[in-house]
Image 1 (cartoon, rainbow, N blue to C red):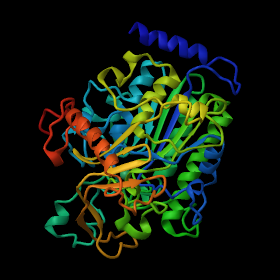
Image 2 (tube, helix red, strand yellow; image 1 turned 135 degrees about the vertical axis):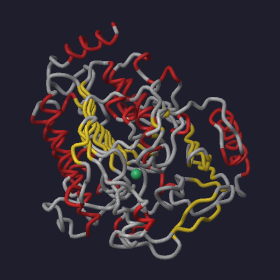
Image 3 (spheres, rainbow, N blue to C red; image 1 turned 30 degrees about the horizontal axis):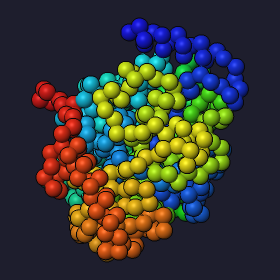
Length: 489
Ligand code: MG
């Protein structure tokens, strides 16, 4: 308690300091997190089909990472990794939690929001939570003072693309998803989100974000904006419909880019730009079965739901004028689980205020992001790619060892117009890729480089002991339990 109060006092002093590029106090933090946006969806990552000037500017005036990974290539697991600094299976979370889920983040884990709140920050989430919709699992119970948004994905409603093609009277459709609720804090403010409502989400999240910035201009804040878009079903406001000239998906990305520009503009208007660290990323790669309603991986292999690069590698832009290296492209591997330790460093959070005492998997990227010098600092040595608790691949430096596993790939044509095409399951072998020479994972070098396969297999064995692996029936010595809903709901 005393430490928490000291945090308030220290943070309060800092916010009255001079507004210069060398602002030294704990920064405001803004994390904008897109849903299912691909590695190749932004201009600064090679996209030419639509325009993302605001994100491109954020990247050109900050740092852009080219080898940045989510913890797992699916919504809930990915968010659990971002907010706790842990591999999601470390804390017992996997997949995409549906309505009525009986798990969430354990009360004992400390999220980025709790870390910031302990430091005297105002905290808010405007967007999709997706880490449990039971009352005790909502964002307001995990460090966020304020919330406006959806409890889970926007396709978890009666009009799910897989259900909507069935007759309305069919049993399968009736057993499908309940009405989609919209929350303000712990109160449902719209019990049945409609298509018209979905079209307003990006704009309303943005309005809430700007209002929060305006209300908290005099104290440090943590603002988390996990957009519902561009997850299917795609929706865009009237102002952006048809604007990209590249179809609905392009329109949706241009509206998200507008939202980023609006938030940055609000920071500038309040004189907060120099004291605010802004991060932009996506929770996983594109949902390729949706064809023209999915994003692009920029040539990376496969997409959402797989541990190939197209599933787990996402854009990552970080910007804090005067602190984060400006105009840098950083190729060192990094992950969403590194964000929490990095922000602990950037905000000067004491260890007791973070999840780090519990044991996190993330590493502190702050020296790398501030210097931009990949040789001057130790970066992430190993990245493990799990699907639930199946260990599917590991990266060390330029090398990625793919472990034998089954994964989904398109069975023929992708869908279109919002309807998905079919997937089929196929199997990988034990495969080795040089991600520097071959980022698209086309040439398996396992037979040519047995010494690298052997060395990385030792890394894998060690990690299986620590975190387990269902594919080889390991339990893992250091897994923690998720939060569980005790009462029947
Ligand atoms: Mg997602």
